[in-house]
Length: 400
Ligand SMILES: Cc1cc2nc3c(=O)[nH]c(=O)nc-3n(C[C@H](O)[C@H](O)[C@H](O)COP(=O)(O)O)c2cc1C
Ligand SMILES: [Fe+2]
Ligand SMILES: [Fe+2]
Image (cartoon, rainbow, N blue to C red; front, side, top):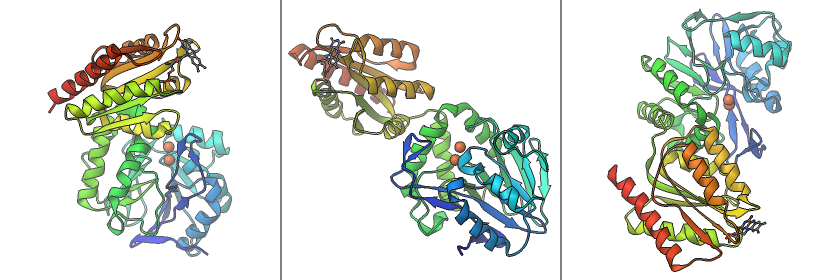
């Protein structure tokens, strides 16, 4: 039988690791897996904070049973209803028929819809409290981080924030589950990827949530994915990562995302990158959109202020993978980016026109003169690519 991991007196981790799933949400690669975190507090009343993906319910229940050690479970606190956390609710209810489910009114609607449960559901409001004994819980509604029912629960006695997906990361917990037990910096990039892929569109609700939390003294941040954050400097670090990402603030650097079938458009990308480096820009990331999962491209677009997109013309349209990437960028309401673009064709160009439409519809500042190349690189094209690189570098350097 698997056992829970003690975090503190009366407070246990009962989450699980997923090293099997290839794509989170069937979209985002999981090379380092992902954890679904669930926690339990044992007090006069017992409370569970979220469940796990149903694929892992067996291991989860082994840990939970062991933590409860024969006691019953009084409360399930639902901070988020996405099935990677709510998946085991039906089974939990069968196991503990008298359990009280705690959520807001949007949670209740989803509990009924997904699991056909409407008995023993207590609806809480923003700021409502629930006393477990020594431990007191206070609920904060944080809608649209990244679903409408999302909320966070703050345990006021030990200052534990159960934050749902917020501050979550991809990557399993391999032994250590608390930041002090591991190298937390290994999770930062996976936190940025998680945020940009999953939560990215909801910068303004995340800002509202951070504002609400700013009054709280946080000693533990218990997200539903990735490590438990307990060290002061780590808590500051992850809050600042979230603050920056949700304001769409990027660092100095440029992502050049290009599509290319036979290498001509790629050559343009190389020339632009060359000039950026000549101009002293050190963070330059070329992404071949057909080779690199868009998950990582989106992550890097969230990290850096400069974005340059290049595409061949394909059946009178953009190259399909570029179209797909642009749709992901639009879907995330990206802002505060410097945007340049280029493209190629052989008989009638369409890619640059479509990129111009995208640029005009975006909230980006358009940089330099777009470059359009026919068939193969001419001296004029070469110079135009250098000029585009230079314009981008100049713009970035103004912000230094
Ligand atoms: C399947 C396919 C469809 C294409 N459709 C068009 C087109 O509609 N209009 C055009 O001018 N060129 C078209 N081209 C030519 C490419 O846009 C052009 O050769 C481009 O420079 C290729 O860039 P690359 O070498 O980076 O792949 C097409 C090429 C392929 C392979
Ligand atoms: Fe989620
Ligand atoms: Fe999640």
